[in-house]
Amino acid sequence: MAELEIRRRSALEGRLEPGDFGTVCADGPRLMVRERPALAIAQVEAWPESAAETVEKIGKTVGVRPSRDPLVATVAGETTALWVGPDSWLLVEPESARGVASLVETLAAELGGQAALTDQGHGRVCLRISGPALTDVLAKGCTLDLDPGRDFDPGRVVGTSLGHMTVTMHRVDEETADLYVARSFAVSFLDWLMHAAAEYGVRVEAA
Image (cartoon, rainbow, N blue to C red; front, top):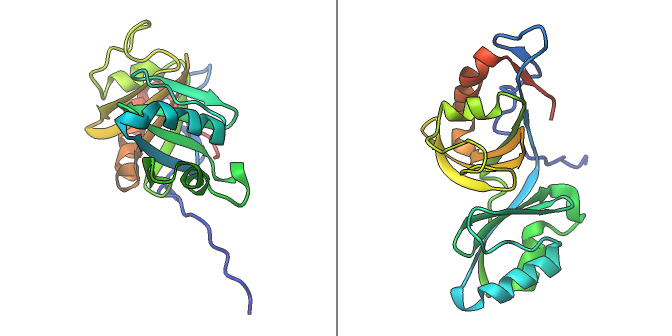
């Protein structure tokens, strides 16, 4: 009997097709969009009395030490730790980063009952957007101050309402951001994003 191949199906399958959309100028589109598929995402919430120890254990186990300072993202190799609340983080990396053992299994083995641990990998979609129109597009849907030196400089992570949907935004660099949205809102969010970016020209890139 042939073995069934089990793969995760993207919430945007069939909806995020490569190509150029909107008003593309002679020098090309000003926003690029692609999905970051098959991500392992673990949410860790530390108990206040052992938060410092939890941070050290996470750093030892997955190679990135989460920041306890608000709104800070830390990156090491393929793994990112996003501050999402007091002593609460999303740890993100490709599913393939650890071979057989998953990110959640690796953390559970080390943390035990020391922190609350939740697998978010199947519940969120991540879109990476980049280009010179990055902040212009984001400004259409949120109330954050996106000017340099304010709410959303590179290395920062913020939770906000974007296009009336709750989104966690990580500013990777000056012209790049990762946007995490609940899987159930992924299609609606993509529709908003493509509409908001159409005047600048959008290039959807293959994942």
